Length: 84
Image (cartoon, rainbow, N blue to C red; front, side):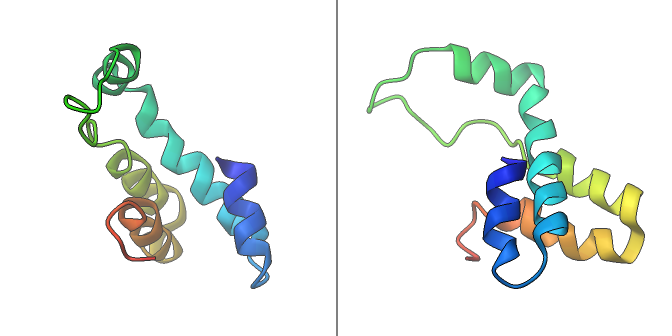
């Protein structure tokens, strides 16, 4: 996800920040709950949005980058919620 996010952000000169945001977004996918979700076969009737996987990365952005991390966190946590 880092490369893809970086490519999108490159359009407005923020490729590096976009790349980091993509990587941080994906750290939440390493949780046991998310791993269990992606390994369980889903049907169109049972498929849900799955467990949260973006909050962990948003929190880590704040820890690593302070004020900039707060801004990054909005994009990391909010991109699945229709903000884009």
